Amino acid sequence: MSIELVSLIVDDYDRAIRFFTRTLDFDLVEDSPATTTDGRPKRWVVVRPRTGGAGLVLARADGDEQTAIIGGQFGGRVGLFLRVVDFEGTLDRIRAAECQVVRGVREEPYGRVCVFRDPWGNLWDLLG
Image (tube, rainbow, N blue to C red; front, side, top):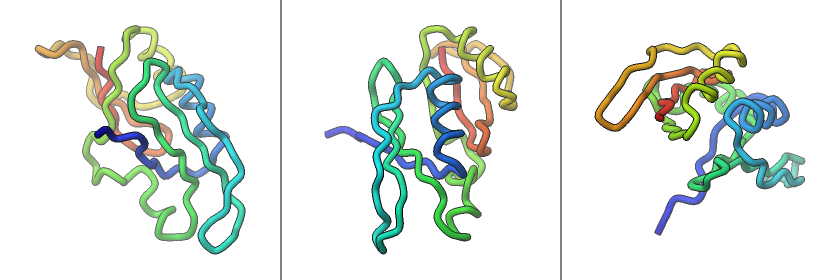
């Protein structure tokens, strides 16, 4: 058993695709037309780290309730953990994308770590 996908609510598909593929170096696995349960058009967008693991469904907010939770899906806690081979290069791209580093780089028994806020407000641990 494994977790295949996790949904992340975003405000715009294309902006999210650019961030995940250019900044975090994810692969765009799928970007297909789809429909909501009531027949309105949407897209099925999946990104995944190049080295594998669970992917993210980039789900554009639909309605006020979903729009209100953009960036708050994890209740203000770090909710996503990304282990990378090139810690410095990834951190440079994160900073260039104007993401806020909310807790600076520190050394822990499990490696280097810092916390950053993505463009939607979600907190991530960057692990190297």
